[in-house]
Image (cartoon, rainbow, N blue to C red; front, top):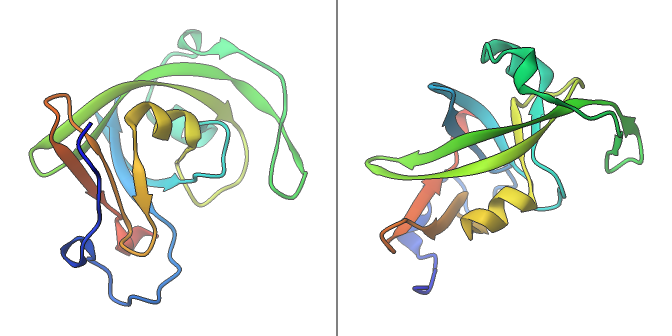
Amino acid sequence: MPPITFINDDFHGVDHQQDDPMVITIEFQNYAVKKVLIDQGSSVDILYWTTYQKLQVPLTAMVPYDEPIYEFSEEKVSTRGYIDLHTVFQEASQTKTILIRFLVVDAPTSYNVLLGRPSLNTLGTVVSTPHLAMKFTSPLGDILTIHSDQRLA
């Protein structure tokens, strides 16, 4: 695996002292899904119910799962099920597709998807919050860089 580093050219932000969240766009089911939060503290990948409905995926594609998850504040959140989706990460002509198991959650949020450690580890992602960028290797061994959609954060 080639080394992954961040340099000044990777910084696309407005302010080096920013504390913005890492928010990107991904693609699955032939839809570009914006407002995807990169959350290195989450032990699950979450697809929010309202987003699931917009994807027009049949309910039969979701496997029932009714174990709750707990938010950072220890608040219990109900789940509807889970679904495996081929997820495309792309910036310019660079792409990588992985299969992600999303837990479908019906909860209010300002995001459409939350990507946690399972998918980030599968990608082999290194995230730099000061740069608002993440890097991982492509299927060909090149380093792919995904920058945050700062205007959507």
